[in-house]
Image (cartoon, rainbow, N blue to C red; front, side, top):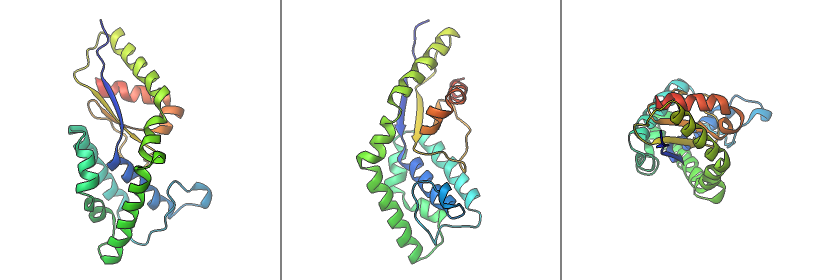
Length: 192
């Protein structure tokens, strides 16, 4: 059987922004040694039910991005208030702080240190991942039904859902380097 696997790895703006907000929230209850990027003190992130609200929004964004990759940019740029409405306290001060957080992320994300670096961070490992997945499918004579899409995020997402959907998976850079075997099993599961 010939290799017919198509795989696309893109750093998702909306999912990375959710990780960014998650880290701001998690930093509120961590020691300095445990901080994650970015460290931005926030007064307006919803503390009550944040984790539940985050999971719901995470699942919604994943569903929409997995249905159509162009939804990613639409959610981040055209529906940016969605994040504020679900994860922040209502009010003018909250909206101002959220707008600053969104702009700070956008400046980082649009720079070489942001999206470009996140995507390039796994170039070599990404190629190895593709080759091993293609070999796995070829050996088992499994023909992929469609393209495998990987939404790459810059950091782990302990508050997000780790489940994979058909031909779509969210992967952190750390998973690619530190949890490679588990990642391979996760991606194989998404193709079945």
